[in-house]
Image (cartoon, rainbow, N blue to C red; front, side, top):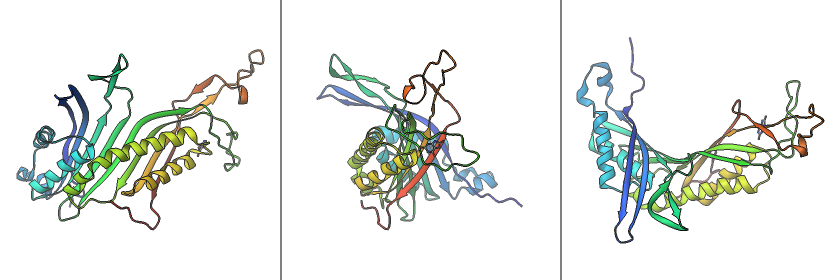
Length: 303
Ligand SMILES: O=c1[nH]c(=O)c2[nH]c(=O)[nH]c2[nH]1
């Protein structure tokens, strides 16, 4: 006999673009996002008995997303995600949980002739802001995890890696000065919100937290003399927890994108290693991958 162990369904890759027009100021602001909605609840019979009466069509979920975006602000993405997720669990009594993922892409206002342009924007980076919301019925509240992904950074000095374990398998030399590059993937989870109004009252702080996390990531990366990716990312986590009382845990996943020195001594004794290194070979793979989750020791997050 078979048994259904897992069932979620919804619409993925709902692309959405909104223009906010400020007639008084004569400026416009744009937001582009991709939304994924996944629902769970008493939907087993749709799988096991072809009972479509329990299915809120994925097309309905898409249309709902558009209508909600028309009728509400879509910034910050945490509040829009919570609004949408809350709608599905409140509207359909047999839907007990909604997962909404919002991926916001960058459209940065152009500076033209030294001035911010009223309605022109540029994609200045592949970096994305990613928000995952999970709303549940039965008073279980709304959980929100926000994050940064695809933020590519590099420093050409100020990074070392020495003192690591050595054995017969170790070839890597110690280094006191290396190139460090990574594509930042970072996420922070807030203390569970009780209700949608609680999420809405926190609206401004979602943007502040994103800015703080981004600034801490970049400042620490740039300013710290890094002894390892592990230690540098831990310091980032500590600072984000200290800066935002409502954050319960912080996660980083950092690839170590290697830049290898090239020994050119075979050519007329050309010096290009150690302190003479100037020309490097960027590596696409393999890459290191360092991950961690850091939470508050013995303390609870505060909204
Ligand atoms: O910061 C680093 N951490 C490691 O675990 C590691 N391993 C490695 O080969 N290089 C590095 N660099």
